[in-house]
Image 1: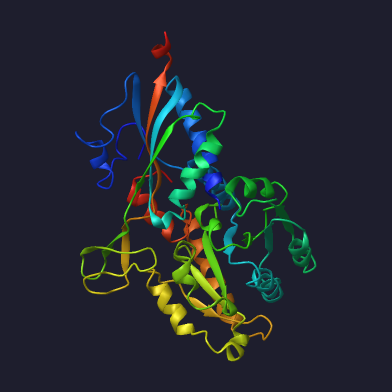
Image 2: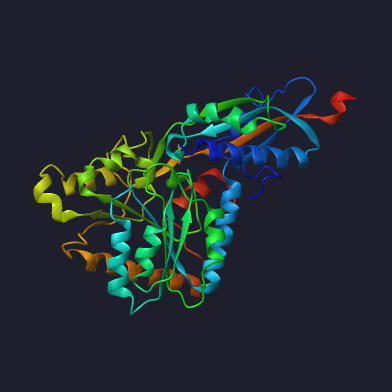
Length: 273
Length: 119
């Protein structure tokens, strides 16, 4: 696909260009140019660069997203404790302010780079690229990119990751996937965290949370876990190990891996990867 | 919340295109947005003049085309309208669908003024 010969004109946008379509006529003295390019194409280019970088080093990159306080860092700590001997892990932390999360990860003996975004509500591919310069990628098996706690904005920015994982802590309510469909549709796996609180809450239905995920046409596994109660962690670790193996199969064939919804979107709009 | 970032990226793209086209001013632009892009059209519309201030897109007229959410059912093979948080097939009710439209975040067309218009 290219932006110049018109092969990115799809059934979804052709009507705009046809005679009588709203793009046919232009104002006096000006000329119209058909672009059909993603608004975030500059970010996407940088994300593709990051992905190439990961693949060259055989690093499986996961974008971890959730609202603030859902337990992303706690899940990472538990993951490091369980898999730290088996895999080499590194972490990029995104927060508006403080080094706190990176310090928690470093205390586990794992390299962590903190990105402080100031007032920015999400990480973008350029920020991750800059952080990668501070990381020695050789020998790293899994890189977790812990995004800024936010259920809205992070979903719109490709960072170059291979998989998206979204956390939903049970005190937030089981209808979060219905309220934040863009974020949850992007998830390759959903972790329902803090499930040890379910008996106290009483009104969170894990079945409803699953139904809301299915309504988003998502086949992503919904994993129930509690770091504090050390419950359900093994299913998460199994998912992680299986996805890492899946990634390695792809890279052995010289292919990369993308979050599930990305190829669909690219194919749909005739956009370049 | 991130609409300003999106607009800054958009203005960057307009500046690059203008240079390619040897244009001096962006007159109009058409952007296509679907509800599943995660971008709120009204906020984008408000953020655009802020991001465009002082650039060659400063007075450009932004038109936003809203794309509907439509899905193709992988079970019964039919297409139907859907909503952002309910992507089920309207005919058979199955959840295994593919998105046909609704996640667009696309710069569709730009109208430029070229230098010769001022000669």
